[in-house]
Amino acid sequence: MMPTVAFYSMKLKLLNSWLCNKIDGIECGTLEDLYYKQQVTYEMKEINKVGEKERSKRGVFITDHAYDMAKNRLSMNRGSFEKLSEKAFILGVNHSEVAGNLKKYIDSKFLSQRSANNIRIYGENIFIFSKQTLITVYQVPTSLKKSALKCQAIKK
Image 1 (cartoon, helix red, strand yellow):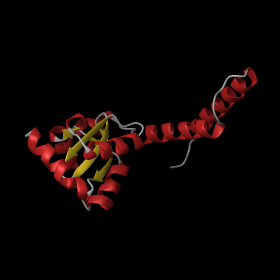
Image 2 (cartoon, rainbow, N blue to C red):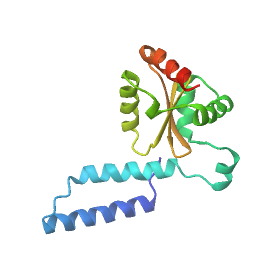
Image 3 (cartoon, rainbow, N blue to C red):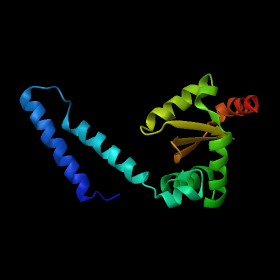
Image 4 (cartoon, rainbow, N blue to C red):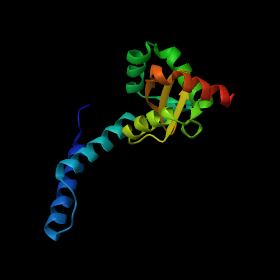
């Protein structure tokens, strides 16, 4: 993803505030950490840009990254993945309905996605959403598939 002038403008403002804080003696961390945080925030905004027309067609918006991960990890095409992601959003098991090792695994995936606020398990897959935007998808590890299917059976 190519950074824009707006991104460099934000980076310059960040450098300015960091320097002012250093001069005033305020602890503000390293400049590299601040740049990394700024870049992640910028990239997530770019990924999640969606026009209202596109969002109104479906209940769930799927990022290009999620389509790529579905193709690589799940071997699914766009059409079937759209249907599956909508079902996962509506019928999937919430993060709060899971326990044990499966919950620990989901917590690790959830914490790796900083903008995520909604995780669903549907079938043998984990769908990570930010509101109604699907960010990425993972397969449940083989050792935890029985637990995932059991949680779904309990929910039904």
